[in-house]
Length: 538
Image 1 (tube, rainbow, N blue to C red):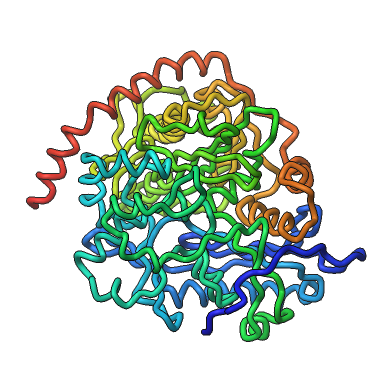
Image 2: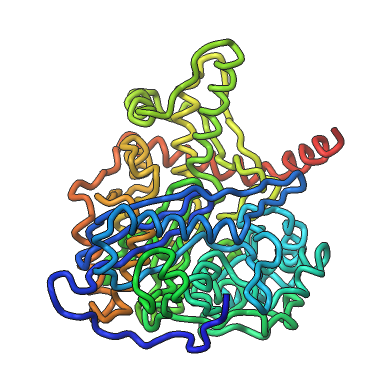
């Protein structure tokens, strides 16, 4: 695979005609699933394919993914899309790439992978990050990046690799992220988007890498290994001849490096709407909570729990606070129930139709019987606080509590975690846009609206990450004057007409329970430390 010496190209207007270059494909590389979604110029979904992507979990807390395997899954997803829908290829205007954030993906000078990628789920850098946060390094880096250090971010992982696998780091010519690797595979260009570049090693004010941040981490010698920063809303690459043949489209098709998945999803879900105080929550396996800042003085720099990204619109920023586990908590709960049923020789719960049935049952289940902390992820929590020892827990169990109360408490805990993140963001939205798998749950929407005290609006489309990436490509191709106009085409028509309003009685109850939720997890660190010591001795 050869580097594309030409790099990127300035945007150009799309050809005229009813079906001339009117299809944009969003390639969204999640941790476990890679999707390719085709959209027309109005943002309407035309077709979709997906392939699974495999990850490897290690006993020492490592979570890794194969670079060749990820590219193979992405290529197969694109091949299937154009093979199953051959009419799309002649109409293709661009491919836009987004993907999972954080982690460490490395290639050598010839473009060959240097070992597996360390994913955002990898916890092996936790001790390094904990030390940085407790010394001057964490606060000083935060003042420039606007992003709090946690176990997911590349700086800590790169430092861990230097200590434990220095030969891998020495062999790397480029150190970047998941979507950047796929963009390289498609174009031969080594680049990264402004969001991930700046929150990892940059200065959100200057819009470039920061020598001071790299020095603080002790990583300044790797400056030349960092890819150039490419704004996908302004320039694009060209699809290589080899990949074009493999997936069945034209060589040189524009390829847009879209923002990292959390920002792409937020854009696709409507986090940007000038003149209104809206926010966006992405509640899937993890929880991500975003709001727009139109004045740099509003960027929260008083804690170390936020991510700060330049917005696609000029002179805007998006701040994010992300908790490690959202629907993962419910998946754990149901998996545990099934393990017990199978041990007893009973039939397990089936996934088909389970969410609607559970929603109906929980809608009539008494609220607030117990409090649940949704810290089920094995590598702890990253937002709105950092603690690799954090563990999930139910508070208030008694013989009067049943499993439906516990399931509802999980929904409530996920909503409390969202409010906790918005508290760290100092955000006070007038409306919350909700996307991700949990947006299908009316019960969760009602709970979230009542916990937040604001209306919750979902979208009529599901693939908001791919849509946000494709919208950025549409902007790059000159289809819109600015991001606001692009959103009026790609987002506004897909906002659900119905808004889920807070339930006054629930809002009153949850206001009181939220205080219990915050105080109890704040006071749990000592117990978590002791638990870690005891379990380590087993």
